[in-house]
Image 1 (tube, rainbow, N blue to C red):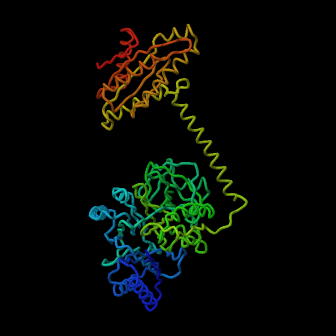
Image 2: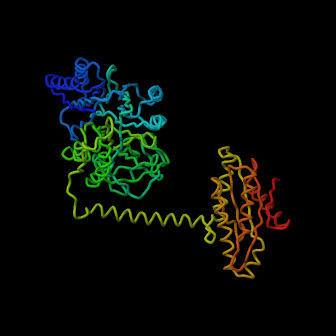
Image 3: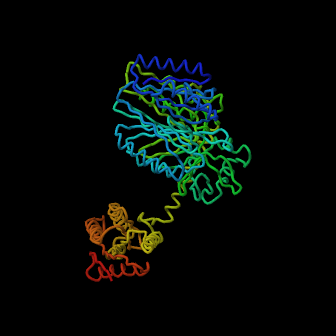
Length: 590
């Protein structure tokens, strides 16, 4: 795989460079050629002119591209408007297909369905590069659909950008297709000798405090923990609602937890109702944390991921970096986080309006993130390995004050959250047995019955009620300390048995009585569980009290009955077990 970088400044220079590429292809192995075109010049006539030159001089080549915030050449911010990246594939087995579709919230499924068809018809596909216009679109549905692609296919790319969001639209374009302000492009790559490694780098670190999204609609975040979202920035960071809001919050975006990955979302502005306009869609009931970024933390993250990219030994590196990162660093420093990659392989790309990466089969839409796609043909050559030298920055002997504050805040928050969890557990847990207390057990029975009545549950709810036989004698003869050990022993048995089932919980009902709630099972299984509890407890030997027994009642909930009726029936089943000799399980259906 060979890559050439071209900057369009004039026809003469551009044609001269294309002639050089043509000559190289004629004298070397060159089976396929793909051009990527990134332009922060929104004049489509200028881009069309470049495309026409490619059609004329390299008619067999594929090309595609988009408008950008700015471009990346040799790992650095590029000053010229139009960047053209030429990739020549040197292995005959490497294949490429270029697709372009309309792209809106109404028709993205058709695009993904046709993409999946192409992947099924071409099993060699192992990587998909994509460019899309995503302004004012929720990406969740699209990402969910893309997640249904075969799991071994990587997907990476970025969103087209328009510098003036009020007057212009971003565009994507490709060979044989027109410019589209609502379009998506897929470049399908693969073959037995084509290899890709894709990853993302954030560098921002989350603080411990979590907030739940209690109200959101697409990219508008209305409430966190039931309060207007802006109040989080006002209260915790003292950020005001003014013209500097975006630049101030850029250092403190939100980490959104999605599919096990922390995804950055940046607040762009504040609405009159104190809701926040975010850089991409938010999801109700998900959790977010405030993140913080500083240059050294970001560069340290790049150092770690750069090592893995270097180990892959790529021949080319594609970068999709968020325009918000450029705003964070400033034009004088933004190149610090990408320039070192050129020592590993030719590095180029653009600054995006959102980044895309598929991880563990899940398609994710990022913001304020650097997505990197490293590619090569054939196996790595050890004698040609290039070493990632890492970011060029002076490590500080003195820890920055912000790190000390962050460390203090995180430690304090962790202690408070641990204390809150402990208090929450104490409120629902019985102190002696460690099982749920009666109030929590009753709440869970009510909850299961509500789901049962609403038709949202499995439809099978069972109660198992237990009572230690002759327990008063244990206390009177052996003392309350030994009685406590008997209660703890039965509690351990209940915990062990209920852990074997996905829908089973145990609680202390009071004194020597206990209750087990089971769902999503059949009666034979429930009776088997009850019998197992009885036998395991009967086989235990206590220091002074020796072996003890338990009587057990079992019943199943009926449609339309009250919780009181259900509990009364299982209590009758337990009483019958006591009446008929104890140390037995009795089922009562009526």
